[in-house]
Amino acid sequence: MINKRLLVKNLLAHNDENSFYDKKRKVNIGQKEGKAKFLKHICALSNSNPKNNAYIVIGVEDDDQVVGVDFFDDSKIQNLINAYLQNPPLVQYENIPFPGLPDGKVVGLVTIRSTGKLCALRKNIWKYYGGSVFFRDGSMSMPKVFDIEIEDINSPIVSEIEKHAQNNIELTLDGVMDFMSNRHDGMETHYKVFKETFVLCWAGIPKHVNEKKFYSRVDIELINEQVKLFYSALDEVKIIHEENAFMITEYVALGLQNNYKYYPLEDVTISFKDNNTYEIDTDLVFEPPKFDKKILHHIYNANNALMKKLERKFPLNPGQQEDLKNLPATYLLCSLNGFEDAKDKLQEAKLYIKRYDADIYASLKEAIRILRKIRYS
Image (cartoon, rainbow, N blue to C red):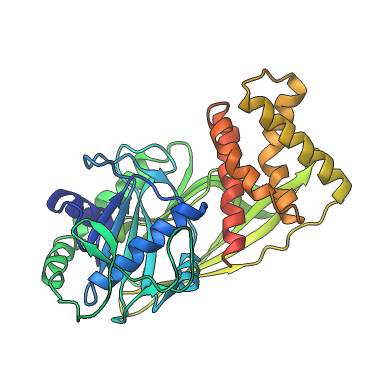
């Protein structure tokens, strides 16, 4: 079993960017340019590594300083790959906790496994044309004409790197102690062993509603692999576990004028198998609430006016400050009720709200995350 944190450290320590490994400060698949570049790198790494895994490490500066990125839980990323690439590789995005990073910050690890077939863009995106084929030329992803069989030169190197990233009992015990004793002060913490192999830890702040137990600020990690499986700064989460499975239901609070209701967003089931493997199944169960379009139109225009004030650095009165707290949730409701530009407005608001208020910025990122989940499901 590979310890993913150790794998990232080995990649950073022993290899500059090359034909099987790339590193990024961040990626932004919410924008067309960022999505196109991400797909280009996936295509190039897949074609250049027909027999072995290839990797992208996200949250690392050019000098290999680990700065981290926001937790990214888009379990439908394979849907994006399948939609834009012919002969798409198998792609897995994992969130790797690293010591010293702030809460919610992780290192993103993208694992690309080629199917052995030539990968190409299925359709136009940004400045790349459908049918384009990319390969790695050193540390660069470049378009090339495919006319020869790719030589398998990376398999022995990647195999050795993965071998030196194998987990052991000491790493597992250290991980459990760190999770339970050091990183979740004041929170309820638990661990459970599945199949005598997998050690899963979770933490959160408990709350009882109608004899049901929910958690907020939930953090769930698979210690053996040093992978953060779930993280939520705001939403309510219900947790159930059985002998061989761990189930999570995430809820999202939506409403107007401080009248909120919790709606189930997604069911996640982690099933542990006898052959030292596990599967994560997700089921989007969200049913968007409907609100009066006239009220939403008024709120939408008010939100746009607030953004203009922040853009021009005008001061906000107390009422406008209160409206700004609700802006991420109300833009989200507008988007769910047919306001097509609301999602773009959320993206545009990131810059202005980030420098204005950290808590509202966290709410904004949650709203964008929810819309991303819905879009790719």
